[in-house]
Length: 54
Image (spheres, rainbow, N blue to C red):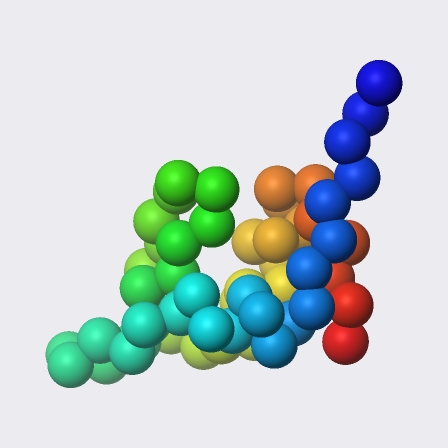
């Protein structure tokens, strides 16, 4: 049985912490990502098999 994971973009956006040196630290399912733009969040979530709701 496959689990379907959904998340709103706003909820995912709250997981991103702005870094003083620029960019963001985004943590999803225990994995950390250093990203430059919050628009990268959707792509990362999809790689984790999330359906992103806008």
